[in-house]
Length: 252
Image 1: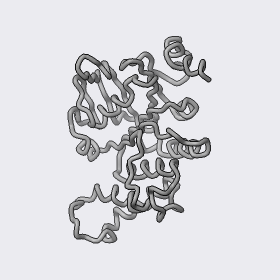
Image 2: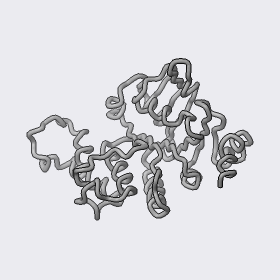
Image 3: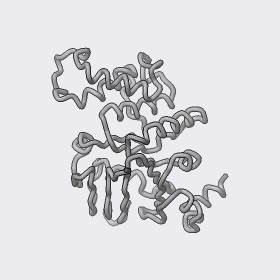
Image 4: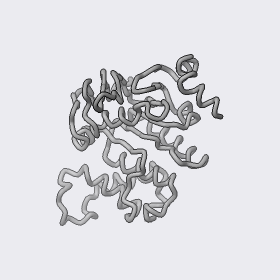
């Protein structure tokens, strides 16, 4: 049975007199992809930052599993089972693909601070890193320097690093940004592969990808939700068409 892994109720974030997010509620279910769309400045990334702990909410409540994590710092929320990617690719560019993913896996080791221990001794972590690399389709790029691989592969690597920490909930902020058609197709395939074992929230501007991936769609404008439901219902919503989708269609 599907289960709610993350629930946010009445989230609000104010910066002075500006409400960047205003009374937003979401539920993220295992085996479902929840996409959040809206024009620039709608509050999508702020919402992601609230859920991940990068920003504390002004009001509202966040529950991860059965635990209230409202106001927790991001590293504590991460250890509770939440992983996220950022708009800007966040990798260790001078290191190999393998080293990037191994370091992410090692962060979850019971004795992650044993700095003098040889990395090869962390057998379980290394096995997890290799499985993750294979899952993300990077096994042939294992020894490549991360800063030298393609943009699409770097985005796959970032997701591999996130998965190596063992999350149940994934927050993905524009994972297809800047990709060509072939790279975007590979990313869509990867996200569909990950769907069964995770709850996912996807912030994305690529509407083709959104409608190919999303089970549930939330539309934000000016920090508020103007529609939320199945992709078909949202697509047919007159308010959404005029505020966002219609605008996109008008610009081709």
